[in-house]
Length: 449
Ligand SMILES: O=P(O)(O)OC[C@H]1O[C@](O)(CO)[C@@H](O)[C@@H]1O
Image (cartoon, rainbow, N blue to C red; front, top):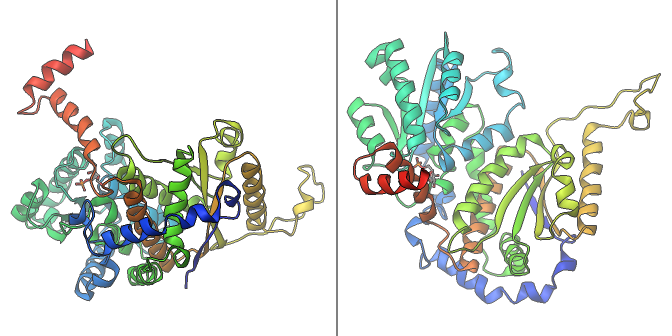
C-alpha cells in the first residue's frame, strides 16, 4: 500500500500556522465548488468522482485491448500531446524498468512503447520511420478534441505507413483511437474506418484524463496493473475528502502554494531524486501551468531532476533570484538498490562509502540539498512517498489533481479551461494558409518582414 505525507518543516519558517488557518473559509468554499460543481469550469469536473465511477466494463475492455496489443506488435505507438500522453508516459516511466524499451524481448514481456506526435519536426518523424522498419506496429491515437495539429500530422504519416504495410483492412485492426464520443475529425475518421475506439467523456479535460482510457490503455500495455492505479486514486479520493484544512494535507499543499505566491515566491520547482519520476514532473507542469497560468496570474511550475540538475540549475536555486520555492518528492523505499564495492587501490577516494548503497548516498544528497536550499532562502515542501507502485501512482495523481482544483479556485481563476493555448494555434493556422485565416495571414506576414 502506498502512503504519501506532506512535510513542510523546511518551509514553515517562511509563514505562520495562522496564515495557513486563515485560508480555512476559502478552502471550504473551494471544496464545495468542486464537490457541488458550482465553481468556474464546472462542466469539466468529471475527474473528481472518476476513481469511484470508472466501470468494471471499461477496465476489462481496456485490459482485453491491451492483451490484444501485446500479442500483435513489437512496437506500440502512442500518438498524442499534452494531457493525451503525459500521464501515460509518467506512469510507464515510473512503474517500469528504467530501460524499458532497451530491454531484450525476453525480459520485456510487452511491446516497446514510443510516444509520438508531440512536435512537428520532420527529422523526428523520418527517424521514427527508420526505427519502425521491419517491426510489427500498432497505434493508439489519442486526441480529445480530435483536431490537434501535432498528433494529427504524425497520425496521417503513420496511418499511410500502416496501410501500405498491412493493407487498409490490416491497418484498421492495428489502430485504436481514443477521442470524443461524437465530435472532432478523429471521431469522424475512426467511425468511417471502423477503428476500435475509447471515449473521453465531455466533462474530463485533457490534463485530468490520465485515469481514463487515455492513460490506462498505454499503461496496461506496458504490463502495469491498472486496477491498482484506480485503487490508489480511490484511496486518495477518500483521504482528501474533508473540507477541514488541518485534516487534509492535499488542501494544505494547495494553500501553502498560494501563501508563497502571495509572498512573491512566483516559481514552484518540483524536484525529484529518481530519474523515473521525470515525466511525473512533466505531467504536473501541464496540470498546474495550464490550470493556473491565466488572467496574468499563477505560479510558474518548473521541474528539476536531482542530483543531475544540481550540477546545472543548482547554482541558481541556491543563489539566484529569491522568487522560488521547492516541492521535493522523496521516495522512502525505491524499487531497487545496489551496494558500492570496496576497491583496494581507492584511487577515486570512495572507500569511505564502500558497503553503503547508492540509495543511501542519494538520501544524503536529498537531505543535504534540502538544508542548503532552505538556508539559501528557498522554502522546501517535501512530499514523502512510501514506495513506487501502481497504487502510489494513482494516489499521487489524484492528490495533485485535487490540490490543483482547490489551488486554482483559491487563486481566483477557472482552473479547467486553457484559452491561452489558442493564440499560437491561430497564428500557425494563418501562416500555414488554413481556410478562414486569410486576414490574419496578411497581418502576420507583414509583421514578420
Ligand atoms: O487531446 P487533444 O484535444 O489533442 O489536446 C491535447 C492537448 O492540447 C491542449 O488542448 C492544448 O492545446 C491541452 O489542453 C491538451 O492536453
